[in-house]
Amino acid sequence: MKIFNTRLPTLSDIQQAQLTAQRQADDYLLLDFDTRQHSRFRAVTVSGEAVGIDLPRTGVLKGDDVLTNAAGELMQVIAKPQAVTKVMAADDFLLMKGAYHLGNRHVPLMFEHSAAGYALYFENDHVLAQMLENLGLHTESASVPFEPETGAYQTGHGHSHSHSHAHTHSHNDAHSHDDDHDNNHNHNHSHNHDDSHSQHNASIGHSNDG
Image (cartoon, rainbow, N blue to C red; front, side, top):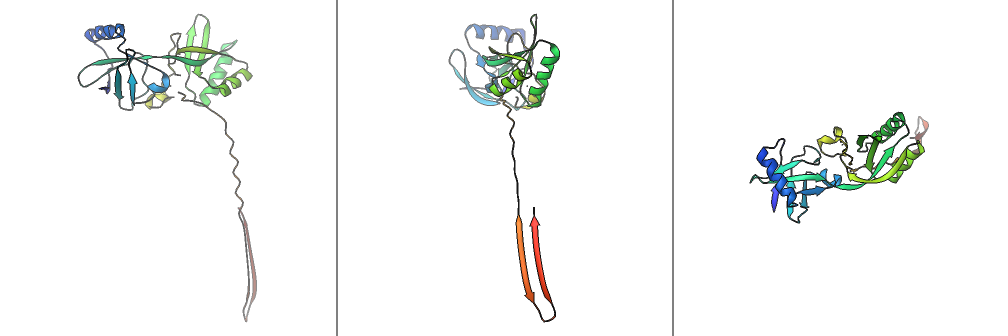
């Protein structure tokens, strides 16, 4: 099995031509956001060939990233369309408010700016969708290549994770639920010592409430 372990930052004209031929032969990887967050995994090309990915932890694989192996062979990664939630609002301020609440929960977001206006995308989570609806935003289901914003997620996990080309990450791996943990610890210790001595009568009581 071929192992691809290096990400190419730039491509020569010859490599570009090679990738074009490979795409025509379905010799490329079509991966969703959850898979692209990992640095080591096994995958299958569109044509059905099993390959291995073994990369340094240098960030989430992006759509159109190109990998190479020790033999100089190339493998292109394409972001796979997946089920996500699209968020829209009547005005930009409200959408910005929605982005704040999602970002506060560390949800990977993809942003889109098209002729129709601005939109946010995140991996499906009905709790988050309901929260946004309660804030006055509109949510709907979509299927797009998910490329969330990079930045905090560029160091490995990404949840970032980001330009939308009418496509959309979605990791979440990212769900955010508010958990309330109520931990009460009460310690009641009572020690009574009744010691009689020839010179003293001492009664000592200790009560510790913690």
